[in-house]
Length: 115
Length: 107
Image (cartoon, rainbow over all chains, first blue to last red; front, side):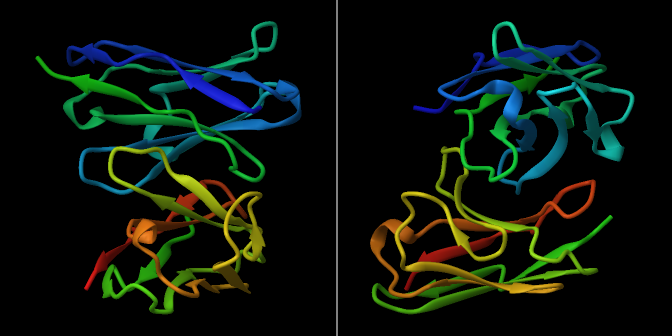
């Protein structure tokens, strides 16, 4: 069965970086892109960007340009999202989702940014 | 960027009610629209893709319609497990954008 399993919760200080992983199983990884979405406490869903697992092409939300990098490792069917220069308003649950039909989501990774 | 506006932002309904949520795009998005259900502390669950296609395993009480700029999600007979927040998302053009959400509460 299709699964997206994300890495565990992180606590980071302002200015640090975080890298969240999303390991896919149960399907051909390179056949679908991966979308990253975050949700700040009590807020709605915010699209962060997309990466093609086929060729690594990316598209990022303008507000995160320069701070976010999405990558994939096809040998392990894993997608990564790295966010740099963390601020307190980056505190959120971060999700990966299989793009296309958006039918499968990871369980979410809580990233807390606090001094 | 394409703005997605959902209405209402919240609603109270009773078990058995028919519920309709509207999503309006600031410009045409063809049928590149998805609907999600989210319960507290859980990841979003995909209900509908391509505006009206039901995801596998989603009960047929959920239906989606629309094209261009105006879309609806309908729950034909609200059940206790349907009380949640619902989001629309356009994926016609980057950046993909979500509506602000509609919280469906028990009356």
